[in-house]
Length: 426
Image (cartoon, rainbow, N blue to C red; front, top):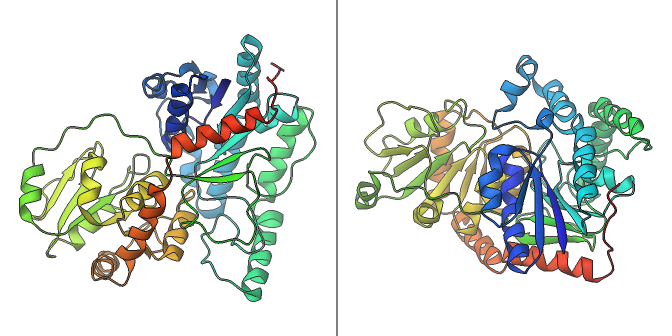
């Protein structure tokens, strides 16, 4: 097969597709990948051919506040609307142009894209190749028996819950996000397409590869046939040396609590990392923090910090993880059976936290800035038992039954075998 990957230039949208590309290339297929320049080395390391996206939509490794300084003046719903328009919808015409250019140079059997890269399904509507979506957030596909995506509502079953979900979904689609959908429809109109449906989902009708396992997701009575849970779509980070304090951490012999704000939302460690370090300073635990490029100053005697950590060696040792809810980090932790304390309320993080809560594998603090008292109580609760570790271990067993890259490659191959022809370069 000849395949074209297309992803938003953001780590959480690029990294999940790396194991898919690697498996497809191992099976003898040809992969080109269009995204931001900062990901070139990781993409070419899979054997894929890297193609730089239009510079006007390439983030170049910068955070969204730097790219869109006006968003810093906004809060709540206004900020979310702005992000949806500026970050995810405005790039659509440039994405379509990028894909058309590449497909004119060489047709492709399929375009694989993360669910936020809307240019791929738009191009399909314009006569381009079939688009296969990869879910890089919790499942966005709406259903009557699951909460609407966005606010991180608690999962409940029964008629009353369905009625509540329907009411909130109507409010989101027809009031809260109405200006966003109208903005999208204006963009579609410039491309000669009719207005789209209400809702946030960007799920392929042919094949959708969903990051994660069914046990983490909200249960639903009906799952469309094209949706496949493939396990943890994560990729080993570039080699990270063990910190100089690693042996001292091991010799301490205490339960290890890891705290992280991820690789993107770590601009202000005062939101979660520093409160966690302070909250656990007098506890009989060892705190290990990921701090990126930040200097956290003098640490308590039971705490260690490093810019980046070798998760493959750290997570098997961890008794609990405090996280802002980045989907990739949560996948890595649960795949190792690590119970979680989640504190995140931006992007898709409320939805990640809600799923951890429903699964029983951790606690949801329902804030991005928990107090030290709240963090301390949550960590104590998770470490004390209550079934959190047992439920996380059950999810780990489910993850181990999925080789995400190989499984995804197999689904893509099957789709092509069943009659998808080589796409035109329209």
